[in-house]
Length: 249
Image (cartoon, rainbow, N blue to C red; front, side):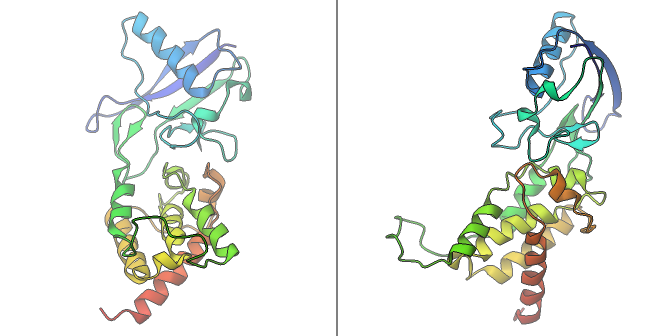
């Protein structure tokens, strides 16, 4: 398979970036997308050129580090699939592929396809701690949790924090990410003591980081490789309004 790759190259945060075009031959349909980039980098190094910088870690669809916009779609064309699990059989011989970093004010480009996503970490930090005893595991059934709530909390907890929801949103909103992190605790008894302050503080931090407001277009849900539902955003809105109306501060 022969491909034409248009890749965003940017040496650092302050420098202007641009697309550069590379021709790549002998790409196997069995390669993952990241393995295809590995082959390109080996070719560039052999030619004495600077390899393309891109994020990667587990390459098993778990960590969400492989944040790439591929032909304008976060993580590429397959639903609920990270870029590391996207395989080249999804493309055809002669295809042109455009590869960009996440585009958001809160995600400044560090180099080429690598962006700084620590703003998401600061949103989680703003949520504070859970005050229940997290020492030894409690006996089974000592804390009763309705089955529906346990399932919904687990679904929210599968958010891998990759930032695809932000990259897909035209307002660069982090509402889907934030709502998943709020929901996973708000649905469980252990998350109740700090439920109000958590919603208020995390939403405030999201605004301070430069993320936009929710567009209600559901692009975030469509782009999410973990299948996080926008129902979590509705839950976050209820949590936030309730917290503001009943807060003593």
